[in-house]
Image 1 (cartoon, rainbow, N blue to C red):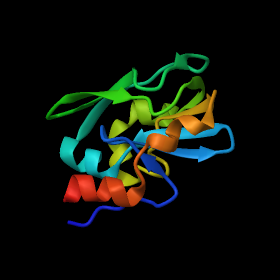
Image 2 (image 1 turned 120 degrees about the vertical axis):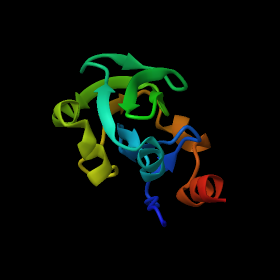
Image 3 (image 1 turned 60 degrees about the vertical axis):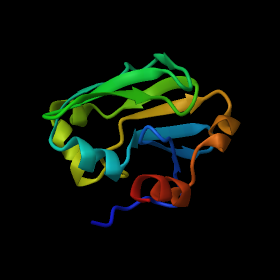
Image 4 (image 1 turned 90 degrees about the vertical axis):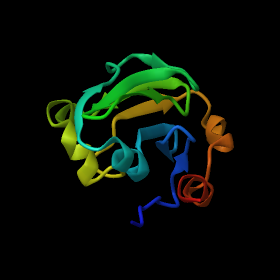
Length: 128
């Protein structure tokens, strides 16, 4: 099965992605993570106004198989969270890079994601 990894995103080896637009980062999990988790049944996400720190846990995603921590690719303040997903977490699987995003963050330092993986690097890691 061929999974998609959009080229405009940066990736963590823990399967989170970040889309940086100016000083706003949109964070979610990759198609690979969704595929590995199976049916997602619960999400725990930070509240708007919460601070998150690069490399630290900002929530959890729970599936029928496992509970996984969500690791932050960047430091900043949560400005939005995907409320509809909290009621229907299974929708992450339909569109992980679009409607399936988790949180939006106003970042302190956009350069923090410079060490994240490119789409090609991430694809090689998970599919290689």
